[in-house]
Image (cartoon, rainbow, N blue to C red):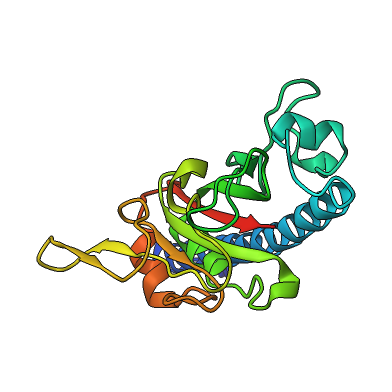
Length: 233
């Protein structure tokens, strides 16, 4: 009699192998997503720093930022090529595929009215809550040499005429409008900003950088429904 020895794997073993592969795949995807998010945040830091430096250098001889907007920024070459969404038009996007707004601001300090922009605002929209918090809590400048007037973060879009519009230089107080656990608004001394937006300025009652707690409370938009904006002179 001849015995035939056949080797094979049972169904249970195959299911175990598939389960291991599934776990490794999920872990790999999660790791890739985390690494990609970190890459985009680092890219945002580089982009904003480059935009600020380029804009301030370009307009240094003019003494103001009169006429600055997305279209002018592109024409003057201050926007990196990888931020263009099309050859024509004024559409500029960030690393998170959200819109970027660059515009002059008429008043540099609270109560001051100027005929031309003495400051400018850069807004990054379309951010996830995690990206919004990480970017908002970064050290974007605390001294006069940095040129930072204020930074704002919140759900939706900041709006150039809203939260940052009345923020002045380091001596100006700012305002935080957030809902408490009871549903009532809690106010901090200063100039009123848009509801749900945290605003900070160097040397103010809400100094820079924005605290993690404040940023988490403000960056509560679902999906990619958050924004961060900077105001520089």
